[in-house]
Length: 432
Image (cartoon, rainbow, N blue to C red; front, side):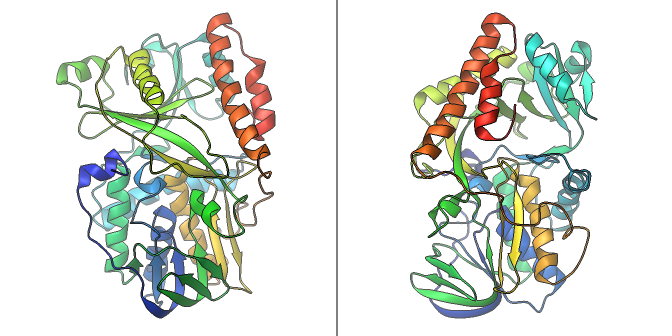
């Protein structure tokens, strides 16, 4: 079964052998997604003498890095902080520079991002969220992209579109050119100070970096650190040229609709619409559901959103799903235990394409013992709290999902903001 349409587009990847026997390194990174690969590359670029080994349970980009919506978004979940906000916004351009330097062809286009309102309630919500984003009127939005019944939108320039699988495979190749060793089909059975144990061997290293994001729940003793929340995606067949002429969207802005239970979109380089949203939000016991396609009802719901937004009845070329890591407070974090040589980053809550690069550069400085602006950012430190045990975790996440859906239905029916969304925000800890 294909991991995602993004990876299927690229065809087979080079196979990397699993780890066998005992290996010594300076740094062992667990996880070959964006966080792990950026960290490996940054470390080798900063100090080419370092022996850096990456072990991956499946294959490069198997997790969210090969499945996501392709948004290099200059924003993070959690409370606003000026220094962190500035750093993540600068990261959008940093990634653009780095992919150019490394020769990574990943369809990077910095077109910004739009959050579109199709109802008065949604428009009021955007006004309340405006901050320093630009509020576009109907005509201003239509000059960028024509959305059915749109009343306005927020525009932020701090976002780029990518083909995410091209990015993660390009990062792996760049890391290997820099001298990093990657072992696929090598699950980490145990992580401890100075050692990662695998089925056929182990890595001894001064530093162990956990870059497992939503899959952290699979590791012993860490099931409640990050909740693996499921997101589903579809990619349409390429739309005809006359349809694109009608829709516009020539700037390749990423797009978010204004609903509480939102969907996120991009125009792909080959003329498709790729759209994602929540399906079945969470599997009991922090399961990942990554091996299964989304339910047919979820695929039809996403296809209907394409019709609702653009008036286009597009055929679905592919559907897939994956998991994103969410902390109990919805705040990502980067952490190190220098005494034990352990480091980790994650909890990006769906905004990990840019955040993983910023986290990797932060981990680089922390591991190398540098005191920099990055190491002083307020997300450096432990997660504030763990998730509740089951069945409370399952019940809470599903309740939030249902409340947000109910809020959207009530808003469409009454034309008024729903208290259901506020209740969902209270339960989740995120706020809506």
